[in-house]
Length: 399
Image (cartoon, rainbow, N blue to C red):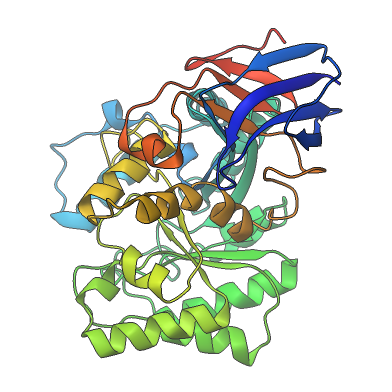
């Protein structure tokens, strides 16, 4: 075999075993594998997990915080960040996006992320510049990370007030080939939320791709649209994967209405992603049986000057703010970064600690999944497609 990992504790299985890898896939999991591998890793006392999956990030605008003109005349809050981000986007070209996204992909892979879903902005400012840059960066880094793309209308849906009509650019991007189509349902924007949901579902059906929509982003419970999305999915018998990201407005909805909306999401099979947002009602969603995932969202751009694309940092932060400290709760948080995300991204049969699955793995210097969230742990090895691609937080392409 190409690689054997010896004596690690298997995350989510709680068994100590050897893992045999050949041809980029797991071919054997046994208490002891007697044969020798071309390469062997001693994982005794360490946790072995499937690689982390970042289900929501904005790679195309990462590392642009230094370009922001904070002195431009712009409103406070979300629209002010949008205005400043628009000015920054004017500096983008294909190679600029490619360089910054590649840097982000390497940073994420070094911390154990082997799969990522990134939002890609398509609008009258950029056209398909971001899409072209992300495509090149994903190809450059295909040996260390698998990247899914979401067509994302950051600037709105219709030409009204602050919004731009992003629909022609969205279609142009989708014709290049995307994994999912998204939307931006935010009460500070003005286009009709239900019309946008209808359009996004129609595009997903037309192109045969998934839906990954930013939904109900707001600091109040007025105009939440999760129940409408659930009804639409059931009415049209939409068979693809659907993810709703953020859902912060649900934290401000009266409890009976919130619970009814969450039940509707669970029944419709909608996954929910919390991109590091403490207002997403994670605990209530989990209790209702919703498939919940995590994302690192913005990395050093106009929307956040922080971020390092480290899934365990995001999980630790959300565990703290949601007061999810018990072992079962920390295990649930770990699952949001791994198997829950694989399910949401349609990769549930391809990834994981099972024979036949792709050998995308991370080894962590901790004895259990609770420690992985609770402590700041080293990652001695990250393995992509059966090859070691990072050691102790640094990319290593020598294998």
